[in-house]
Length: 322
Image 1: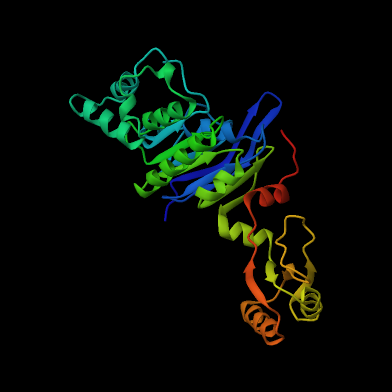
Image 2: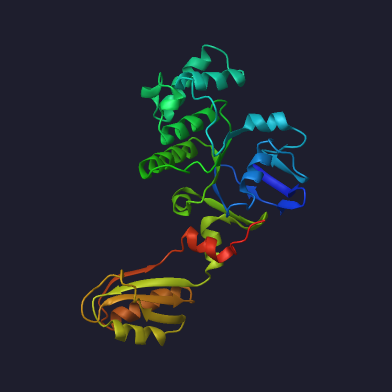
């Protein structure tokens, strides 16, 4: 399948500063792609190139096969861009804001009026139709801005820090809206420093630092590559010490310890949470559980502890900026 986004040896320089260094990434159609990196890593620069707002110094980028260098108009028809700031049209009413952009995209009446109603319903702002943009909350402005990116029905949505400054409820509402857009068949590229938010919504991630792409692909594959072993979390009602001794003798177990975290689940005398670094295969894992049960270890939880995006981010990056 041809990726909807592809960059080829993409580089961007501002004088002596290298903002992007030979960037090659691909985003499959229908993905929610989390673009992660520290400040100054090159995220916004990449997004501006993909939206034709900034010509690359070297290389090229393609949106659904269209070159940002040679076919900028075709690219703009395919992309909806939501920057990390709202804009300067606060004296407009909500419907006027969408009508203005609909007119710019060449959408004629009466379709434009119907489209405004559809977009306001999609982002749950119908009751704010006659309100002034300046009177909206930060979360409502973000949803209105997202509605504006949908005006011309683009295949790709590029969202730069959309959750920035939002309260918890507004972030939840935004996350649910993005899930709905994916169900509608949109591909979404989203940058954010709120890694826990991305973990809940992204199917793919890319990690960038100093303008270089350090990792890119589907979330499960990247996490498996960065942690080739399994970290097992086992809760036992008793005999925790005996269980650790048994586990440390078992093939495929690199180490087994009792979790001394104060927040770990307290389970009574000699009970607790065991953390096991396991390097074996699934057959050995199944046999391990059977061995614990056969040894009369009272287990109430046995599962792999999954890596989160924050752990992956810290493992891959060095905290440097360009």
